[in-house]
Length: 574
Image (cartoon, rainbow, N blue to C red; front, side, top):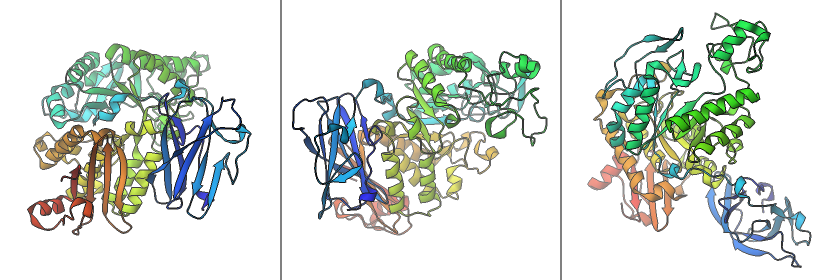
């Protein structure tokens, strides 16, 4: 037995409450090492001696490149549990508890693994609606100024003495004018990049957190947009930029003007007095800021006054504009205490508000249930890039990587992950595919059939490409609306919405061989099983006996499968 690969961490993604009656237990071991794994649990508060344990068999829920993950969802009659694992590799049987391997039990309950209390306050609760969500991410300046059009205009509007800029002319009115398009595409959630008053067209250098930028139509445009979207059953998420502000945010202007005499001198990180704003973009400022961007000074969100100010921002837009969620910018650089306070503030107004953190790395730290419900899943994009675009990893490696994504968080957090191929910060995925529509469609199909919220960046469905910021934030190409690619997006989204297994089902890799470009996986829910076969390679592939030994290069139907590189089976029927 490869004991060095065995891992269990109490009070983590390896042992957590799903709700007050169900507890998830996981154990990691070397891939293919164990023949069986059994959980033995007991009531910590039970006074009966000797100690009484109840066995329950575990199953392999997932496997990555190096490990198997054994799992059971325990319908527990107890709130307090102590437990151990019985491991069997076919030749050796050991007991595992308290991070120790042994061949016997002890009467001291403190030596076993323990779940002290499955407390409702500690259970991660995610809004139910995430299971059905298909998100459409709009960069407001680039999308529309009218019905299926955008009138390109670079302009500046005066806002209380400060210019605020638009580059391409998109507005919130324009988004509302195209709600028919969004509905026909099939999306049911819109995420907007920043819309508050800010100097530059991207709106990440904020100067007023309580008003919508006049370039986008002002507050009334957002009221109108929310009403229009909600009338069609489409939710709306907005961008919260609380790590930093702009030069002309009132508090920063005050410290520049008054120096140490300013009552806002403690609102910012690392100020040196007098505060000097460098004229040259190449000069580093003598204060902390976002990514050394001199015009974006970093806020000290640990300051109680700063914390309360931005918690009120969070409450304000939920209460007065009825938004459905926040995407939180540079979330990993903001202190944990602020996010806990922010969550409490907005969830008190509406518990169904979704909180999505911009975290580019593995985000388990922020997904314990006390900060975010979700994060932007850039790892999803990274793995898809390697498999579909670069084709530098095979099906086995890809299957291992995506499995790791499912096991690294608590079970209820994975359906809420914001899976994306594109965003306003990265090159378009179609460009990474070298313009190859076949590879691009396969990546889209995978996103629409994987666990988590599929997210479409505006124009992805119309074939937008671009490697530079100016290119991937280009105007929406409305002339391409009737493309076959757009039809593919509609059909893939419709399939996800029709098949409950694709939204709520367990994920299982059926086949992913070393050196192969063919991955077969299944989503299962209740009595429905959906099996998806994706062939990244250009060669014909025989499917397994279970799927009728279809050959992808023979016959009309098979030729279609070969050309598209995929097949979808619902309960065994293609």
